[in-house]
Every structure is written in structure tokens, then in C-alpha cells.
Image 1 (cartoon, protein in one colour):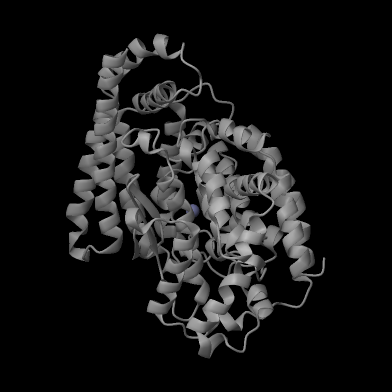
Image 2: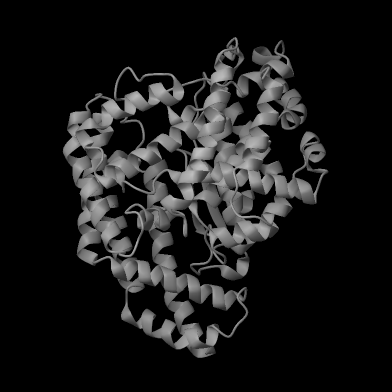
Length: 501
Ligand code: ZN
């Protein structure tokens, strides 16, 4: 078994290296590359992706797995090699079921559709993207058809991002959440709006960035194995466990933009930095799912970074850095400002209470489109009506309506959004479990120390990479299956204190 396993690991690590090389090119494209580099860079990334896909679908991988599986079946379930073989089997099966011609065609379509969207959005021109979106919908359906045996056509697409999650499991979860959130938003919006003008003064870029770095260093983001650069749309990317980078964007007239995007991406980054170093170069050295990954970004951004305790420690320091802007502003005013709940149009700017309403309506539209219950041409009107119904606001145009998110214009329709809300729900569960194990965590947060919280996350989540399925990981870490109650408890407690509910 050892010789065959070594051969498999070598092949898998070469695939991972090709992916990492493509990721370096992608990071450079999004940070420092001059515009003139775009055409060649697109070609170079496509080549590396194709080489990686060819190697992953090499029948020899299948033969090696077949040889190894009878042996690995005898190993304990949580043995690392057994887990590697399970993960490799899953990746192999997913890759071989989709013909390479389809992959190439869909990728080319997505790249072209993305280009159109980049100009269509500022021009508020939905018609410009309509035909592409119809094609994307067709490609998305065809992609799902390569995985027959599903209950709902969206299931295979959801499974790419959130393994094991289906429409049937998501529907009751989301409905429970929506039932609780709509009246909560309603009762908050009946109250006097919070004044957040203290966040809109002039805050010089270099001070903002230095302050964000100071915080995430204390969280435990390791700058020896990472760095932060500027970009248009912040993201995290990993080239190895020893090189996990994050990006941010800065608005000098809005203190929250760089700060919270830095905390968010650092959460993703600490996850990847915390993976068991023995998994280096192997496909299990990755996050468990998009939902589990997002649980970590939201944990450090919101559960920690927008908590009163956190700012009890950091606000005096922030006031020192921006004394002119904040010396007259009390901690309470600042805390209320960064937690202002507001019915708004843009998902990425939404507060913790309204955020999931933005996500869940997108999820419903993906299902409607895939099922053929909604035509692409009717999407903008349906979008605006649903915003009115759920959030009480109606987009004045498509730019800040149906055109706002890149996802459908550069990828698949189906499986693109549920991970954001799963992330919040899981964050509630993980945070509650960590607090049960270590009741001292809130006091530590108020003292600016995060070792216990970070340590719990590392031990129970980060360390395992993709070793367990998301459902297994959640059950092992929290003792229960996915459940919205801890998250709802968190929101109720926090926002009852902020608003009179
Ligand atoms: Zn994220």
C-alpha cells in the first residue's frame, strides 16, 4: 500500500502545485499587474487550469484509488490517509464526470460574460447581459445533468461548494431563519435611525491599514506566512499552508470598508494557515466547504470584530490613531454606528440582521431559474418585487439591483450563494460551542487576547482541513447537526441590547 500511496500523493501534489501556480498568477492579476497584462494572463491561467484538470482526470489516478481503497477501508475513519483517499476519490469523480470540452466551453463563456458585466453594471444595462445569462443558465443545467440521480437540479451545483447540502436540507433551515428575521428587521426599522456619521470623516489610508494589521496580528493571523495587499474586491488566496494572502480595499471617507474587510479576510486566512502542516501539498489541505469557510470570516469580522468587548479594548487605541476624528465620539456611539441596522439594496454592505435576507432571496432565484419557473428576462422585475417584500426597499435601477453581484455573470447559476448564510449559521454554532468549552472567552476578547478562541477554532476546525465532510465536522465540533438556533440567539441578544426590542 505504501508505494501506491506515495505514487498517488506525488500525483496529487503536482496537481495542487499547478493550481497554486495559477493562484499566484490570479493574485498578481488582482493586485499589481498592469492592465496591459490581461490578455496574456488570462491565457496563462487557463493553461495551468487545463493542465491541472488533465492530470486530475488521468485514468491512472482512478487505478491508484482502486488499488488503495480495499486497504484504506480497513483503516480507522479518521486516519489521515483514509481521509486523503476519500477526498481524492470525490475530486476525481467530480472531475471525470464533466467532459473537458464542456469545461473549456463554459470557461470561455464565463470569461466573456464577465467582461460584458463589468461594463453593463455601471451602464445599468441588464439587456446587455441577458443573452449571456440565458446561456449561463443553460450551461448550469447541463453541468447538473452530468450528475444524475439528484432530487433537485440545484443539488449537484450546491454540492460543489457545500458538500452534502441539498435543497431539501436548506429549505427548512432558510425558512426558519427568514421567519425570525423579517419581523426582527421590521421592529428595528420602526425605531429612530442610528447616527453613523462618525464613521464618515476623513481617515487617511496608511493609518487605516496599519490599524487593521495591528488587530489581525493579535487575532493570530501570521504575517510570516501571509501578507495583505490592496485590490478592488477583497479576497483570500492560499498558495501553500506557509503562504496564505489576504487583500483589502480602502475608502478614506468610510472607516468600516478596509477595517471589516481585513478582519473578514483574515478569518479566511487563519483557517488556511491553521490546517495541519502534514497535509501540505495535498487536496485535504483546504477548507471543508464554502459555508464552513465563511463561518470563520464572519466570526472574526462580526462575532468578535463588531462586539462591544472587542471595542472596549481597541476603541481607545483607535481614538489615539484618529484623535481629531474620534476623540469626541464615545465608545457607545461608535459601537452603535458600526452595528447600524438598515434596510438597504447592496448585499455586501448589509448589516448582520438584514444580510441573510439578501442571500436567501438570491438562493430562491437560483432555484426558480433552474426549475424554469422564472425566465431570465423577468428576473429584474422579480428581483425588485422580492426586495420590496423582504427588505422593504425597491432598487431604483438594476445597477444596484440584479446586476450587483458578480457570481451569475462569471460562473454558475446554482450553488453560488447558500454558503454565505450557512456561514453565519455555522458561526453561531461554533462560537456557542467555543464559549461552552471556555466561558472565559468574552473576558479575553475584552482584554485584547484571542488565544483561547483561536485555539478552539484551530483544534476543532482549521486543523482538519477537508478531512471530514462539513456535516461531520460540525457534529464533531458542536455535538449537533447544523441548526439555526445558536445564531438566532446571538442576534436576538446582541440587537435587543442595541435596540429596544
Ligand atoms: Zn468571505
